[in-house]
Image (tube, rainbow, N blue to C red; front, side):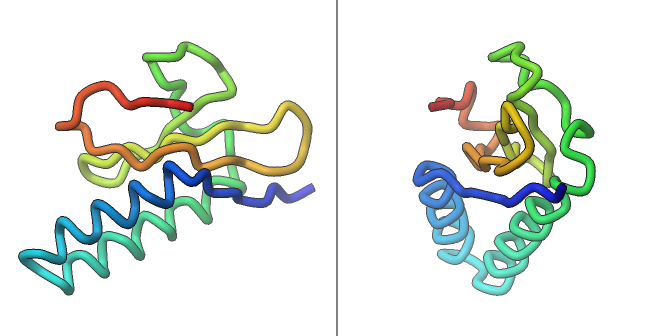
Length: 99
């Protein structure tokens, strides 16, 4: 069964904030970065276990994949169903606040 992607409000805000920050100096780069991050989230259901376990949580259900310095943090479902994108976090911001 294929997993669906669900974005948390925090992750949506993260994506909006990071693209606005990049757009302040380069609109094209902001669009490209946003699209690439969304594209990476769409590939997570193909192999949800492939992301590394988030070290701050050490919970096998909370994993991450990367796009450059951005951490795409997601939660695996307890049962088949929805994968939740929890945060899009830039590594320079320190430890992510994971709901």
